[in-house]
Length: 334
Image (cartoon, rainbow, N blue to C red):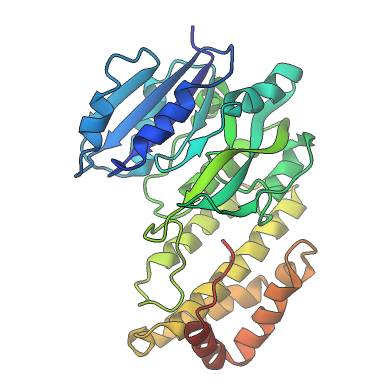
């Protein structure tokens, strides 16, 4: 019997996948676990590296054609045997007490539907950039859903959360393959909308590595505007549909984030070298989204005052702020 299943989706991860898998193999836990690695059609030597683990009983390798991370996760979820499920990114790694820390909530309470660990973002060289904040203990499900949208908290990542596999199955949850950005956040919101309570241990046992050349970990403001960031608005539109109507605080937090997101995309347009080529009506649509959610954004007591000041300046002087952002090389928090 397997207690915990760990899913790793790998695409062109030849340089990092060994460290990732090895950090999981040497866990100081009594729980029985499996590591399911799904190779999503990598074009480098990821497949050959994974073959080195063919004789490792804890590791299951699935090689497939490239269909994207959401489809890969869905395929992997059909294969896992564990009662509990978590995810690790192929370019990250974990501390030796990662599984022990993650499993703590479930071992202490029958009321817990999700367990969350702390994480730290670090550079490729190991320099710590930030640590997720939070207070150790149990959190009601409706409160946790709201806190997912607090920057620098435990956020809506998959990688620092452990799920109940039977709850996922009972809810019929799968990853939405139509979403290109924040599909993990959407999945977490669907799950949390049905949680009684979660348990948080903010100890930073997950190492979230930020690479300069990573699309996921980089900021696009100042570069050519491609329109890909607009996909995040599609995700937030879906998220609003799964937030329970009675959870007004969570809905307000979603709208506040949507406001800031639309504002940030508009600023990216103003800072882009090809800004004159972007349809002007798009800027107007982004402004409408921001203004519709402005009250929730300005009333939010968690968001930093810096963001609210930037918001006011942006819509008063969008071109000037966009130019300053590009020239000074400023970045939004992620």
